[in-house]
Image 1 (cartoon, rainbow, N blue to C red):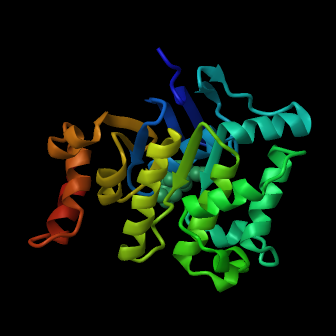
Image 2: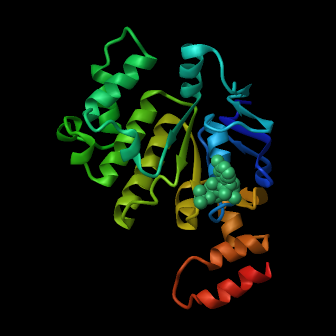
Image 3: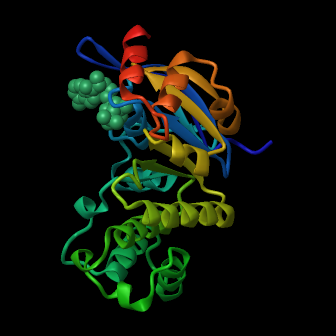
Length: 265
Ligand SMILES: Nc1ncnc2c1ncn2[C@@H]1O[C@H](COP(=O)(O)OP(=O)(O)OP(=O)(O)O)[C@@H](O)[C@H]1O
């Protein structure tokens, strides 16, 4: 049996007396897509940051392709090796893109760092093509690009490293609905082509429905429900999941009733 792309086993992380992540475990199969949903403060981002290595866990383990993920050490080589396991795409790629560096240069620098000594012309073209950016965008600086294009650059840069897992933290939350749909379609295509596993952090159940196979629902640091996305959304087992589903605005939506249900939970 192939190794899972990612496994989290019994993750814990507290900030003072706040248990931000409280015994969180999940499995992301190779080429799979797992959503982590929950309201603001439920511990989604802290979980993602532990997976990526931006945050340490007080207890528990993260495994990539069956191997325990090192939390640090190994110098530059160790950092590069860890980066090849897991890459992350943030909500606002603008913050992580150097304003003076063109799209093509961004990709070349990443490739040079991870795959030195080879010619990257073909790979740069391939990556631009994969994320649907043309030659004009290749010469552009980040501020000359739209939000959707910048997100494509961030995705291309992450793919350049050929990671096992891509963590997407509210990666489409800042985009218009139509651009959101384009990026989600793009991500679906890329997953088919590359078999990279996706970990989708989002508060948006619409996103979860479109791009994940499995989902875990977090509340106050704990996993309150987990399963196949289609099944959890069609027949949520936990009252909190039902509440999240009911909170998605639609005709007949009554914010006062939702607020009352939330207080009762
Ligand atoms: N660096 C930190 N220091 C102190 N408390 C923190 C820190 N990071 C997160 N927390 C707390 O941990 C809890 C979980 O936060 P986290 O950001 O993981 O939730 P979230 O579900 O991702 O929310 P959001 O969608 O708003 O980012 C919250 O109570 C938060 O205030």
